[in-house]
Image (cartoon, rainbow, N blue to C red):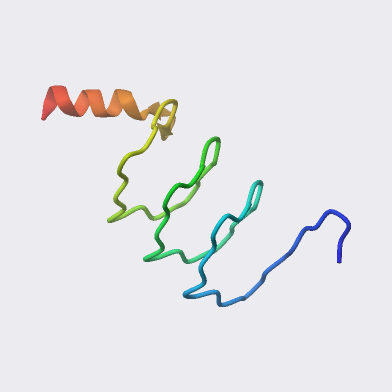
Length: 85
């Protein structure tokens, strides 16, 4: 085991796994299928997403302060929608 407690999972099938009170801080995900996954009480502050499929994603009760999509503040995008909707 590495002294820094790092782990690598490659070609692993964790379908149906449940994680409770787990720290994945600074974890890296590449080519990961999270279709149908459910997230509750999750801290994604300062997380980065690139080349992601967010079709059909539902976000509720979220703190979106400072969140950007393609470099534009989400609050600005939502404000624009309210004015043009």
